[in-house]
Length: 175
Ligand SMILES: C[S@@+](CC[C@H](N)C(=O)[O-])C[C@H]1O[C@@H](n2cnc3c(N)ncnc32)[C@H](O)[C@@H]1O
Image 1 (cartoon, rainbow, N blue to C red):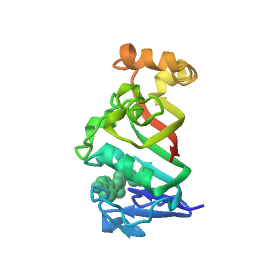
Image 2: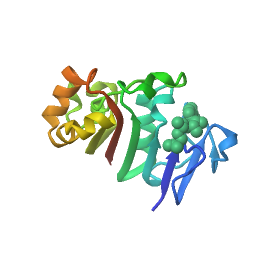
Image 3: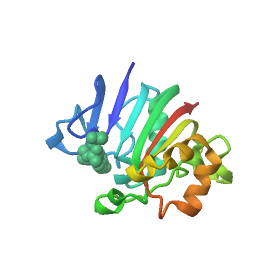
Image 4: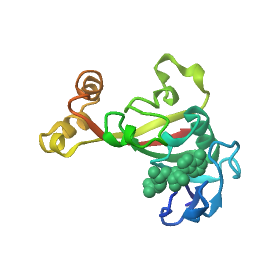
């Protein structure tokens, strides 16, 4: 199992190749993820992990296309990123993007009618939203994750009050 951990920080995922642009975190590969192509062969990974890094990158579409290039057919992409209503999303001045649970839909099989932004496609295996503790205890997290239509309703009408925390996505590369 070849795993690539992009923006690995100080704790590279066990067994993964860690990439980061900051030499102080001592990555396996020192590389700026805004520079393309990344220094790996096409289809050379079974899994790419992008944990709290996509919101830092210059071009989300290009990064997704590069993750797609590096994954074997059927390979898995894990993305974790703050929901845009969380304090951490805007508190960190190195965050360039503030995302929702629908922010990667252009790469989906039905691409929400905007398939022309990119040719690369991912199958959405799962999307999970973590909410602030109070809302979790009141049962909103369960509802948001159990019912996709309720998640859409929450994103449109409720999320400025019932605030999100972290988004967790699992995708499969379609090639
Ligand atoms: C919030 S930390 C997350 C670290 C780790 N993934 C984790 O979850 O603990 C973001 C990491 O992404 C790295 N990073 C941000 N922009 C980058 C870029 N353009 N190229 C490479 N690494 C980048 C930072 O140096 C930092 O280590």
